[in-house]
Length: 236
Image (cartoon, rainbow, N blue to C red; front, top):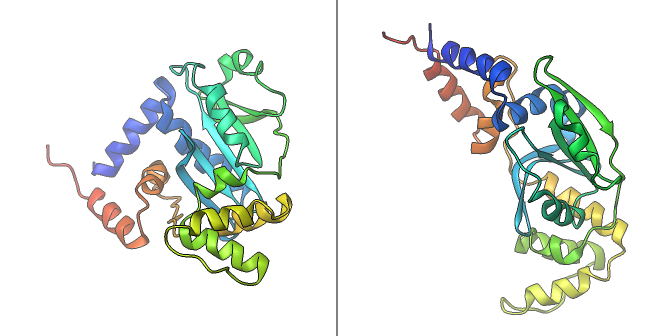
């Protein structure tokens, strides 16, 4: 047996007996995101920071969608705070929860989408659709955008960038961005996220490792080297 064969065996055991967060994320990535979205027009982020929260998976295509995963071992104590952060920046919000615990999570707002995961059948099901919100918070967005990104928004919308320096450019751009109509700003924000250099090189043959490769932002060359090494036989 080679190293990848052993990893696949362990993965299958975890999938049936102990579906931890990695299993949830990787299966959702493979069985939902990669099947429902054309990745040539989308980008997927792993652990996307928003305010004091870190979103499990985020996809930007025509709009922004966030997916927060809760396993059997997770409590609800942080979820309300996470959702409040996500409302400020994402157009659609979904929580992914075990099928056996659906009642615990349906009590949250009706605007929040809920997806269940049955680890026995490896099936994801939308129980409650997310309500789309296109009015994102400029202040929250400014803390996500890089300097050249928020300056490009100002230049794109106003046709030029005003006189500024390294000390005041953040505040100058922030005031101008706050005056952009919400729908227009949301589109510009999504478009900028889509062109960030995130490696979305997902493999069908090695699908058990897609989440690891996304988390490490591995290039195709780095992935090829990883898979080559994992095809070596295990010496017992």
